[in-house]
Length: 188
Image (tube, rainbow, N blue to C red; front, side, top):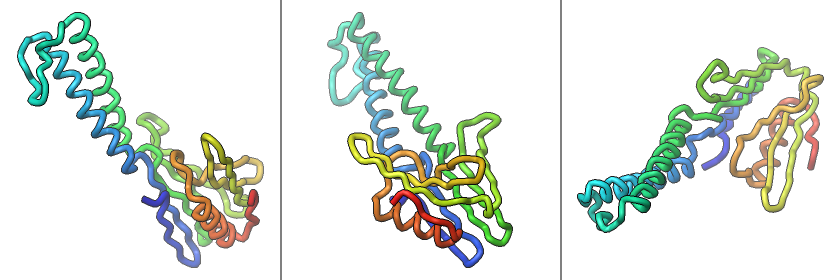
């Protein structure tokens, strides 16, 4: 999966960003749901002395402390899985970057957590854009990101959080954006 889908005309450049609906989040939400359900059913089986699992016999577990521990891990896992599914359904972090020469506006839109700031919508005039900055840090926790430098406002992130982009993809996105806006590309 790519980190963004870009559509461009001579007046508008729009980059769609992938949020929480990443393949890895679906994978972990499913794995945690299945695993925690097994732990919870093991804890309930040890309490009721009825086998609720087809692949093992948790009735052999002593309810205190083993059954309680299994039940606790099951409940915590189910809550974590519910949280991940909530992120996926709400697509937290998803959105777009739009650079519109016709209206003279730069719009950065992201979906956030529920509440009054669920819609994060930042708009600036294109003439306030100073440059596009590439930030590359290698090592144990690599970071590769693009930033939009705005006069008097600082830097706004343009790339998604999570897996770092491939260096070639980052350079291509930065160069394309700098060319479109007619601003310098910094950091390479």
